[in-house]
Length: 276
Image (cartoon, rainbow, N blue to C red; front, side, top):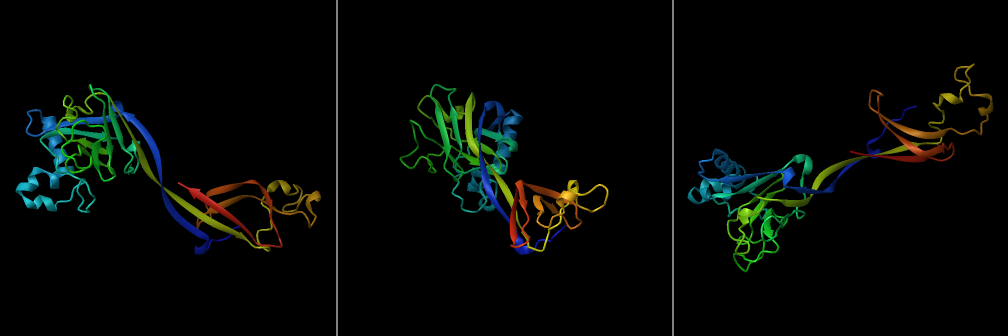
């Protein structure tokens, strides 16, 4: 017994779900970078960071305005509020595996705590892609902690990358360049889009009144109900609703918590929802 859905009986919508992740240095890949270093690894990671994240905000754009028109992961030319003016000759870049954030890191959820130095450095994001310290003893100005003067690095939410680019001192003893060199902890929320499909299954009084449950049929007569089930008052019960494609192949089914008697007097509606 099949019945087709109309467009009005189908609905599709999406919502964002978030999961908290807690990581440490053992599950995050950190690379130091340095311009012009004799160490090819340090030099290559500098080039990688400059080209992919900081080209439009680097010192190259100061000498060649053409670079200001080049969109990068960091500067997508969408006035996002991210500061890229502190890309210096050295720093560190850290990579989070995509399996640890899915579609992206939720803006405003990132925090990093580094207790491996003589002073504990606490770093958070400002929801715009800038990282700043919440407990710095020194600051570059009296501006907001996440201002273009005081921010100390960036986070690129879509790709799970964050950087520490400030080279100044955190407290007069510990420099920001020391952050992420030792043991540290990171916490944030990963984002995943959930697609929900909904169907409204209608059953009119004159529809779907026959059962497909083979246990109710008499084994001596094909299609004949057992003797104790031949009363006209015996209802058909709905226990499952199957979803089929155009070729009548079963794609999934919903099982009711308990069988529901099918009414032959009033219309019935069943709502089926599937998330993935």
